[in-house]
Length: 190
Image (cartoon, rainbow, N blue to C red; front, side, top):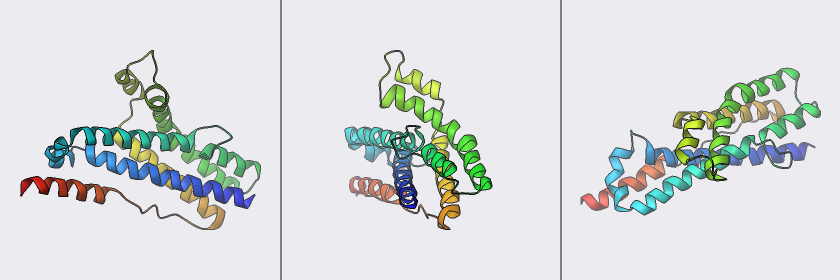
């Protein structure tokens, strides 16, 4: 059983990392702090950046959705928590903390991701426009970031209790994205 739990942890760490990387790229493209600095360069390659913005957003949603879906035949946090509880592998106090992070921090944000994924991106609802789906979800960019961060916290609390490890989650895509945009901007200024 230890191997199965270790495999779950590895899969969930990877998916969390993917979500974080896609969030960072998407947010560099969209943020009011960075977009104005590079919008002219991005407009020179309009179709590429429109597609890239969309692709990174959808990849973010898919990864975040995957982390908290409730199917019992996929790697997801609710299933892992159930296994740990059923197997009595962690203390009641630790399980209570993990459940609290899941229910109070992650799940309310995941429900918003779920709406977007299931009504606008993974499936396309005939009953609603994309704008209506976004309005129903009411999700903000900061909430997407917060869901990534809550997931990192939950996984690190879990793994610290499980095997005294934590994961640094130190891969970042922000600096590379800024460098790329800076290079594109510089090519046309000189």
